[in-house]
Length: 154
Length: 462
Image (cartoon, rainbow over all chains, first blue to last red; front, side, top):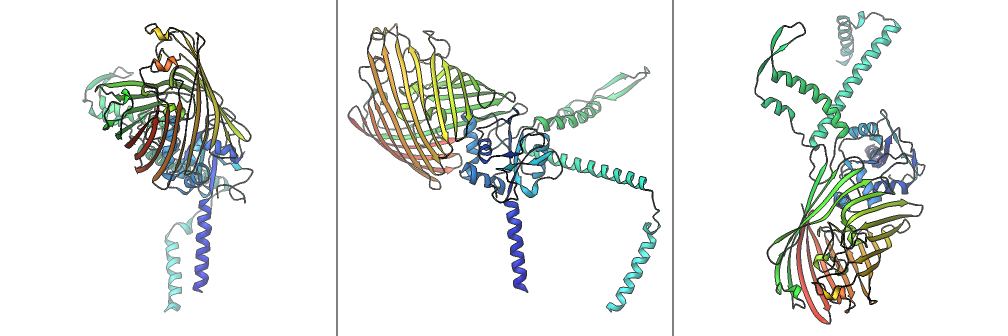
């Protein structure tokens, strides 16, 4: 009986942990983009592309570096040390490549609200933290939603 | 015992129900029910909105120091004034109370306004108020031992401490598409003086990904190093810049700064990104150190053009050519420099930076064509490799320059331009997030003379 309980508990923990590890990419509902390729997203994350197709300026919103979501991005896209993330952005500003730093916010609730309010915003939060209300939508990456196989930020 | 508990519990619950209004609840009509439901829903949503707003404001306030305007109001002395109401009746009101009420109303609006215009900051940049201003600085202190000097430029003795550059960098976003950038460097001269150099001063117009316009003084788009490392030594791996891209006032052979207009942008294409930068500027003065920030002596503008390709298939790889064209004015005070010189610089870079690896290579050909018909070519370049292991970053660099010794432009300069052949090995250690210690050994051959240099540098950002 104990063994069964332990197995159930461990399975639940793994399930919950995996669910939180998946990073969803959210944008304002008015954004015409619904599906984005991984390369296009990478260009946005690296601030090479700073404008949406409708000429709206892109505003990057991250959770703090200590969060799973941002660490997933750093591992898979930036490929730098976590502690170098702020240096990475400062260097971009120093090189005159960006005009302002990305926004870093602790609370997923706040991020949801900001994305709802800012038409050019793009944010990266845990898939379970995405608000079902509000003016936001989850972007597909290479045609995949976060719960589908082949989604890059699992 | 449990047999009696259940009936007792049932009796107690029944009594409780009887004493509450639940059992006497009147049936309501469907329309009343819907009205009630909508009212409760509206109240709930209102409360939820207020809570979320409060949370958002608290979070923003924790990230920004918002000057308490309430304080300014509170500090004002209380004065009483007579205010006429519409019925011409006068009554005394407290100005402070009135202002406080006004402030509270204004504050409600202001908070909403600040949500729209809120500025967030990442990392350590110092930011001020509504108009974002970021100020950062760099500095370094060096210690060096040189086994012997080959030049009058190196008469600082054989071993010495030296203050490096004190570099103040500031940038401000003026609107969604316009920003200002300045880099001012305080340089410590051998004479003891402190020279203040405006190294970059520009206004930046961000049109779209394809077109960004810089107007002012900037670093010329010539190669990789000059556009990426600028003056903050903390950002670069090594103690010094490579000899070929050394700054003009440190004896560098290539113009690194200029004043004019620069267009740049990126085309994000299938398979690769294409970056370009193109500048029209005043060009060089009569010698290697003279920068024409105020006017142009010969009215012939310098042109710089650089392309860079970043293939997606090899992440971290950047490569591309650059070219610079200028006509250097004649120097009326120097009989050996009585002719204009046409200068063309061809450059190219291949750079690979990914995870722990840093591989930088650049090469330049500097062509000077005098009106008299003499043509001189100078070749130079460097290759640098570094590998990061935790906080340590060992590195190696090879520097090479081969001057044309008869090139009048370099020969008549205040610096000695030596053929350079230098190997440098070093170790960078990240002492803290904003402070790096660099230790390096160089063996160089300068015009056939061997020189050994040992250096230690602490470079920091604040």
